[in-house]
Length: 92
Image (cartoon, rainbow, N blue to C red; front, side):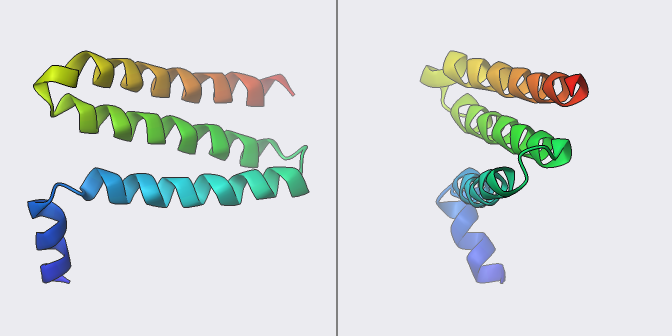
């Protein structure tokens, strides 16, 4: 386990691994939304995972000095997606 964590840290792959896990979660949530279209908690979870995915990508880009503004934009979009998910969930 320590060897795996060292490889992730040395190659700066932590945000990529997080994005892969969030991508798998969002695919599962989309399938659940198709099965249960009126469940607002699944919809809220899908919006939240999508927002977290954008925030994770933004944090990855913040580390690069040339792409810092793109990282800030992705973080703002991620927060906006989460807020929209909360508002949409409260409407129904």
